[in-house]
Image (cartoon, one colour):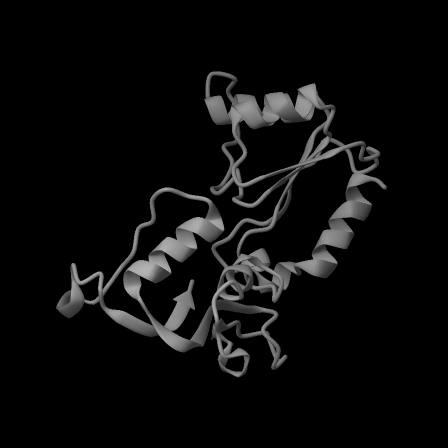
Length: 194
């Protein structure tokens, strides 16, 4: 399978039309459409150490959740710029970089659904929060964010601990209403993930 064929396959699972307008998703670095994919490295963020790891593991396709190129590229790529040097290192080593971010989030098999389904939710209450203008489907695919009612109320602390455990993280930033600021013992019955 070559870069172009893998790109088409990924687009079928996570269409570009599901991405938010501000998001820069798809094939972002492409040294050559016809390169045969040997190994794929999957990462949350493209960094210099990830590129070095890809080279050492002979990966010539990196699937990055966050788009490494999130702004309009400069007309002149300067090796002194660390990001530009990293992009050029990918090109020099025939490594393609593909990103699926908000279009992956909008998938019914995406990270939002993964997290919500780890809770005891009423499946009939699961819905998308934001539907894109061009989406006609009543399914969750193509909607951003998720909302669901829990079968039983849980404390905010319990929900926070669960998300940290599910995501294998030590810290989590949350937002609460001003009237409940600092009240981590508040009970919740609706979970929303954006």
